[in-house]
Length: 89
Image (tube, rainbow, N blue to C red; front, side, top):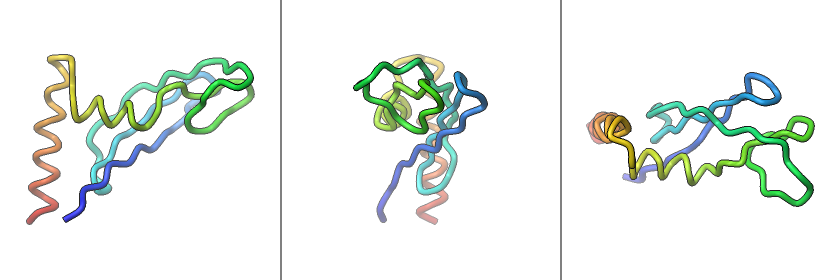
């Protein structure tokens, strides 16, 4: 069985957005995305609207799910376990 993490970005406005992390198409969590004004040559992620885009990579969102550093984020481990159990049934 192969496990695939993906990140889906959603922009509510030019300066606001979210990023949802999925494991094999099962939603794990939605984070607030950091949208900033981008200067020329700066690395961006997701859609750029005007001079604004996300400065957080998909990799960083996935790492936040896999390796939570905040006590409140430990709940992601339980969610991942449930998704894995469902996938492996």
